[in-house]
Amino acid sequence: MYWNNCVPFFFSPLLSHHNTFCLSAMDSISIMRNVKDASETFLPNGMSGFKEASKATIGILGSGDFAKSLAIRFIRSGYAVVIGSRNPKRAVGFFPPLVEIVHQEDAVMKTNLIFVAMHREHYTSLWDLKHLLVGKILVDVSNNVRINQYPEANAEYLASLFPNSTVVKGFNVISAWALQFGPKDANRQIYICSNVVEARQQIIELARQLDFIPIDMGTLASAKEIENMPLHLFTLWKGPVLVAIGLSIFFYIYSFIRDIVHPYVKNKQSDFYKIPIEIVNKTLPVVAITLLSLVYLAGLLASAFQLNSGTKYRRFPTWLEHWLQCRKQLGLLSFFFASVHTIYSLCLPMRRSERYFFLNLAYQQVHINIENSWNEEEVWRMEMYISFGIMSLGLLSLLAVTSIPSVSSSLNWREFNFIHSTLGYVALLISTFHVLIYGWKRAFEEQYYRFYTPPNFILALILPFTVIIGKLILLFPCINRRLRKIRKGWEKSQLTNDTSTILLQASPERVTVM
Image (cartoon, rainbow, N blue to C red):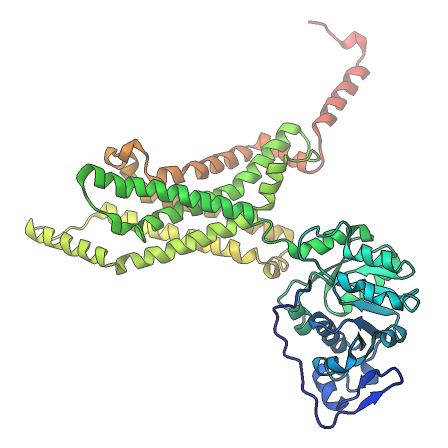
């Protein structure tokens, strides 16, 4: 299964009246269309002719979409391409003008480097070419439909069919779009493996010339892992998304009981109109700050584990490893909930219910003859509340932007660590102030404990306070010094060994037994 099934292709020029076809004895077809015009479209910059562009000839067995994308990419990089097809006549109009389209046996004889761009079930169709493939490099670019669909990898199966050929696995994790238009915005990494080091290095160098980043995965034993890579669907996102959904459901139901059910039970007051916006807007910030706290709580637990074990070489528990790997996703989800909360908050004054509320409030003030309802304390509270909210959202935006691979790759480790560690804790601290100012005195007023349950903002502060206090404890000089030594390679066992050595070397006359 190839990646290009749903990708549009824009390089399928129609045959012109000036096209000339040269039929060989094998009824093969070589396309010799307007070379000058074609070179302007497909050749790399600075190359004006076909001979100048041809670094080497690369064969491709297969005439599907992925084969076409490979051909376009190779031509643009200055290689000559020969396509091996079972029906060359039908494939003529599908490929660029400079591609030579012949029968499969002719393509095999023209080059020593062949890309096998066909599904696994069609490998046996090459059996008749086995004698021609001896000593040649076969690059398997296939994928499967399901993870671990077959007992062995496709590349291993291909190697078993053609034991006298050198099989290399690679180019299967990139899309046809990235091949055709260059890896500018797509993932540039290509995973390559083979049992023959020389062949592996040759394909690695080829990937570099195509402007990709090759990663050496060793022998063909890694082929199955490489083939499973494109089939993973949001592997690191499943846990964080489930956590976010669970928190959203819990806090939404919690707010619904407190703000909708309680007034209805106590005073027969119908506030069900709050369900679409107000209850949602009370849920979003609690989930956002909880997710942000979970990002840094994992690091605190890892530090505590290292302090307890006295070494950095002991493996973390599986659940903590998964948690540490998902911190980026948790942070991005926190930014998402905070952004949506901001939009909802800006839309609150637009509601008809809010307009009625302010009109009724104005009528009540007129009725009791109040000319000035200015409350200095409430004014300052709201000013600080909004200010801290804006600052926390700005810092979350910075954390989200710098987590983008293209941005994070431009930062060195010290810069990246400063943004995501130091500024991350600052963002959590400011967000905590934002929630505290929102709560203000209401945490101490009985009327806000409906059904004897604390307000939402009190629940939202539990994890942030835990993380902030834990971080302050780790900053104590005695603890911080020990943690730094452990992360530099020091182990608790070294202290025990050093102490034992000192006792063994001590003179008996100087040892006093108390």
